[in-house]
Each structure stands twice: as C-alpha cells, then as structure tokens.
Length: 301
Image (cartoon, rainbow, N blue to C red; front, side):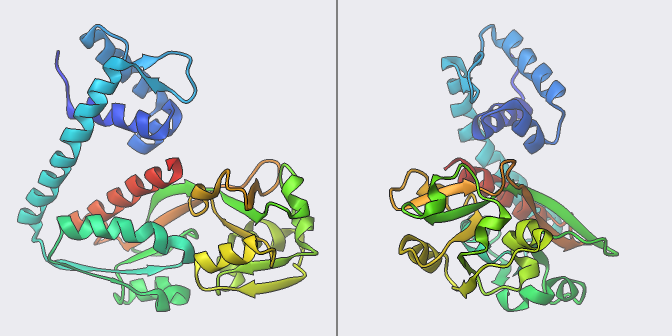
C-alpha cells in the first residue's frame, strides 16, 4: 500500500468539513477529483474508508485509523515545511495585522498563538486602530495583512480567501422573534440593535440586510466586547447579528435563540489582503493556512 501526504490531507479534510464538497473547496480541487482520489486509496487498502450514505460523511474503522495517522504526521510535516522555508527565506520578518472584522479577535488570537511557535522571530502585532483605513495602511507598508470581508480591485494587492461564514440573528429565548424560523429586515424596525462600535459599512446586518431593504432599527446600542453584547441580548436589552462561529457555543443554550437572516440565509467570505510581493512569503503563507484551519475548527466546534 502506497500512502502519500495528499491522501492524509484528503482524509483529514473530509473529517474536518463533514462532506466532499466542502473538503474539495478546502483542498482547492474538484469534487470529482476528490472522489477519484478516495476510490484510489480504498482500492489500495482493500477496505472502505467511509460509511456510505451517512450525513455528515463518517469514517469507517479503517478510515479512523488513517485519520489518526494524518493527525499525527501532517502537523509534523507542516512544522518541517515551515522550518525549511525559514532556512531558505530567513525566519525573521514582520506580521502587523489590521482588522476590519471586529469579531475576529476571538478567531485570530488562537491563530497567532500557533503562528508564534512556528515563527518565533517574526514580529507580530495587531492594529485595530487602523481598521477604518486598513487598506491604505497596507499600501503604505504600515501593516502587512488586512483581515476583511470586502475585497477591492486594488493594484499590487492580493485578497486570499480564508473562509465563509454566515451572519446570524441572536435574541433572548423569550423574545417574540425567537419563535420565528428566520428573520427578515422588517423585523428589526421595532428593535434595539446591539452592534460593535463600527461604521455601518462594516457591519453585515446593514450591508446584507437592512440598508438594501431601507429598514432602520428603532434604536442602536454599541458595545466593544462580544461578551457584553451577549449579556445585553440575554437580558432582553436588544438583538444582535453576529458571525455563526462567534455564537457556535450558544446553540441549544436556554437563554438564546439563533436564527438565519431571511429564509435563504446569508453567506460572507473573509479574506487576508496582502501586498502582492509579500503574499508568497513563507510566514505569510503559513499564517493564511493556519487561519483557514482554525476557522474550520470553530465552525465545527
């Protein structure tokens, strides 16, 4: 049996994402190519690696053994790749990050914790104060990465996709809207909307729902911290719209109700913007890879 690193990455991607389509996106290959690769692994092993017709797709006993090998081997390979790349390109550098996504602190900090261990000589900093003019700061080399959900067609600037997320509605479990299967723009007209202290153009609830529908909340209340927003919502002081990965731990919580925005829901994508000349730098490429991996963990958590 001949096992390659790509086989290990495939089995882990399918396990992490729970399906072929999302795994193919994560691996940047077609679903057809992924299915062919799975068949090739099973033909070599002589056993089925997945429980067929299960949703989400589940690993068989043999598949779990291969997954255990992947989870043991791939992190070590990634560390070696980072170390070797550092030897070639130099381990020192600068990674100053500006954030246009206010909720991203809770996602970004675990990423940076992993990053600093692989790149101890890279200077890391987060510049939230530049959030409103982050892209001009990137071009002026004041920062090196901008986390944004609003890609622009800018010269010598790359927007690397990180992950998709869904903005979701959050209210107290006793709120009248908690009984709805979803909420529409008009439902906000009589509500106090609790948001981060960010301009409307950077808030999904406005860009994706309220502004196009020309609906204005009854009142807007701002809070700097996610924990405070959650406290206010649970206390019946208002409603909020937050990324799905921020409220993942509240699903099933007796104090909250989480509902989609509209019957179809809304999907947004987060990007890492970098200067084109820097995108391929080993430590920046490693940061982007870690960012995608951490997002998958959060969304499945």
